Length: 299
Image 1 (spheres, helix red, strand yellow):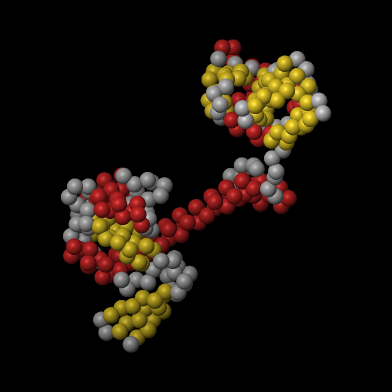
Image 2 (cartoon, rainbow, N blue to C red; image 1 turned 90 degrees about the horizontal axis):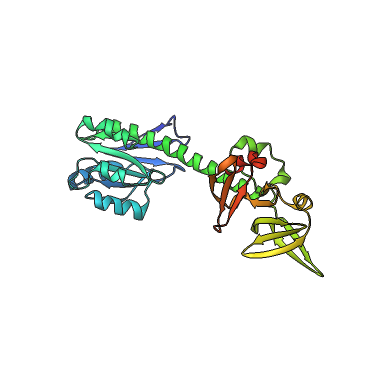
């Protein structure tokens, strides 16, 4: 038995290839196993490919499909990392299968075809690559190496987006890049309690979360605060009230109106440079020309 160590340029972990007679066994340490489906209308082709894949340590065949309908069902149920997909199948072709998949969640597709003319179409429908039949051993390993690299990049990007979303949720601010995250003071990433507005009515004080305020109207020296379907009345001037409000969410758009910018559903232009804003509740408020610079908050 002859043992040789092969280190891939794409993978950090060494792969040990053991030759024992005509049997080849690939053993890999700490490799991510790629769950795989084989889709081909020919049973002999499915068996042949499955046989080639069984000794590749990071490939696990979790299902086989005989046609496009079965392929769509198995992809939805098993959510594989990788699909070997025959193009020329009766009924739903391989191309049609891919067109019915959600591009955001679809697995990596490797098309199988006996005709090189299908290659261009394969790339147009988001297949990573294609393999000509009969399958060449070296070509198979080349495209699998490409799959590993592509999947690692895809997972890294997804992980990055999740981290940024988590940081945004915690800080209460939109953080769109790691450079922004690096510039944040650690104290800013402590989860913030929603700010509250104290509404006093005689001897009673009601605390209202500012996140829940939809809009505020001025009526003389009184403010009508609309929150969760309830109108709260408080005696205060507009300027006094503005100093107490969180300007990240509550912005003045008219001399007598403050609106929650996160609850604006639609914006419609009106005469003389004014706009009507429709809120989540269906209520409409006017944005006057004086506060036209606030439009950027709704775009």
